[in-house]
Length: 387
Image (cartoon, rainbow, N blue to C red; front, side, top):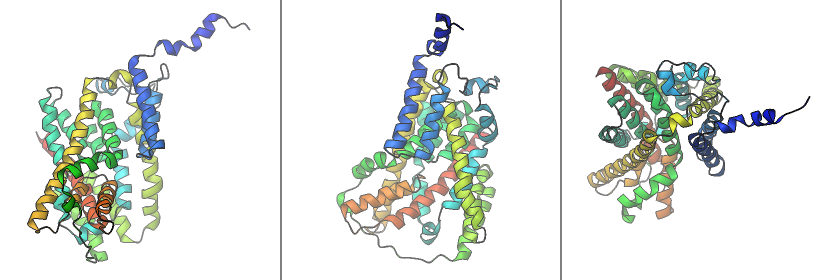
């Protein structure tokens, strides 16, 4: 059998279909994988997303998901990831499974022993509503789209995906990428803002941890009470907060260790793999590389910065109200990037004073941010679906 030039050229036919947008997204996928491996920035998410982006932009492979086409009623049955999208993202199943795992891994003890940290967590969500208004001001987005972009300010990947999949599914890819990428950059983005807004003396304020023992009864009642209150006050948040608190209830019950281990490990890991690679598959060059995506990425950084700044400024207010006894750095842990934000706060405290351990206080604020960010997502959904 002879191989002619036509046969040889057909091997490289895919190269002829390669566009600049595909090349750009292949590079983005490579960068995400590099950050995950070389810098260890959220590797469990960035590696699947990066691989998905690369597969989606191989010409002729048919593995990409053009969400705008899907929203227009053009199912892409040829893509291997289409079934995962329909089963796990369109139905919001993957984010909710992740919340079960997050709940099973989260200790709300620091928050229960210092309930005022809920206020710090609330302050850390300022970026959601500020960026919503900024997105509208650009004139590039509708109100549901702006609300979906604003939820990046929750600094919570599953919440961002859950809200975006309901309000603006066609923007799911850039919103998810922005949320998870900036979450992984917490140690880089937060410290300059924290230093800018605080003085050296404020950063050196010591906050000795006074342990207030939390009974098992309180730990068990907490997820039940939060679920019920959320259901009555913001029903749209029930799926999010309900799955989070279900995972936590299993943890605190102390009688279902096997379920807790499964939820926090195998179940969460499987959902993370499928969620990450499917999100990556939506990063098709022609649909992803555009002005709207660039604006979303910029607004995502602003949301992160505003959350951090609002938290630190609220910490300064608490410092004034307590006559210098509250370290404003704690406010930066009010975002939902758990537990990275708490570790950043503790590290900065130790840089100023090697005996200034802020971790337990920061963990209280960080777990509060986790709960409040989910509530904020539910509030946004309730407002938008009720409008």
